Image (cartoon, rainbow, N blue to C red; front, side, top):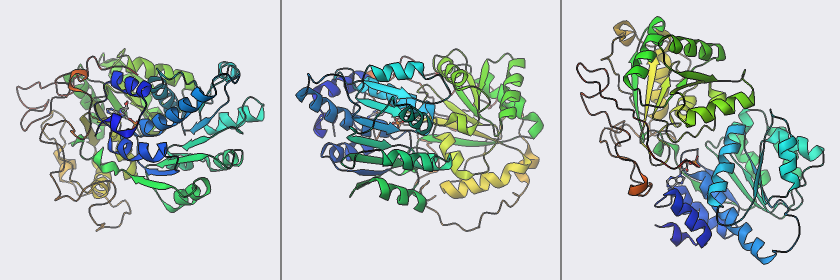
Length: 463
Ligand code: AMP
């Protein structure tokens, strides 16, 4: 399947081609025709599946074809509203739209809280076709009279489950109440519990449903391993991992904000350049740090889960769980930060004594055994041998759930060394040898081998 088979207009095709996308991802293949036909859509998909393009491309196309018809009609009115839970994701969506709309002339404005509103309100005053917004700032600016939603024809609620987790339900309901009845609505969520389905019922009208199983982006694409290590040695192990992979862009997850700062300090002691993003840092500081990381100014970004939401760093080669998450679904979100779209990713999880139960819960959720890497200087055999503490999960959960394949379906990780072939950039746009797959016996801690398996991606287009 090619993008041109989906009925996409040539200015957008040209932009897609420039980005080096060779073929649509499964969600794009399924959702784009539905959306171009004007249907509402309920999409189960998480980031990394290409869902942003799946919803932004048809909206852009519909807007630019109607723009064409009513060219001389004065200031642009907002026609599409996209709601995202976090500033990071909102920025990422608007960046994506900017790339896809390069040759259509559609205008996008992005607004979010935590920064002064002046730039955002003056951008709005100049007129735009598409507004990407976080819920709080949107309601604030509506209240101040800067935004009217009465001309909205396309409404997207992205990452609905995170939106509810973050307590935005009332804001969302207020926003829905301000939208015209007649509109096309799109609703995306990685998970579909009852509360989400109930919310989608209030927004969608006779929707088509598209489901992209998240296990295809995590379990299949991310090579995972557990490193048993005592708590006291975690800092040294992290420095070791970073030193062994000097070209890698590494995202390290810490369970707490304080912990994240401590990790950064310890890395600095080993002369490893690193910075942290977490809830105690201002939005501006977080964004600046993220931008510097994306530009390769430093190689280790330490983050808490909330701060890391929506991070899309195309060069990210390795995720390290310094602390294992106590909620197994969080593990899937975390490792999904690497192995985006066509890439192969790597995820290493440090596990100390008290965390063994988390590994067991995660393995149950993803229906995979995560291989143990014992050949490193800080391996803790005591922890490896210890039986896990109970964390209250019921035993015997059946295999093959929404996060993973049945253990017998294929081998757990990606030992074949082949990049995901389902969709990818054109070979010429794709740098060679980015991710050396760890073949048996070739990992960074094997005697004699300094296999730098997480090398930085070179030359990929920045969007
Ligand atoms: P998303 O799921 O929207 O967060 O997209 C994840 C990443 O995949 C982004 O960096 C996109 O630029 C990239 N992407 C989206 N569609 C394609 C495609 N058809 N081929 C290759 N990469 C893509």
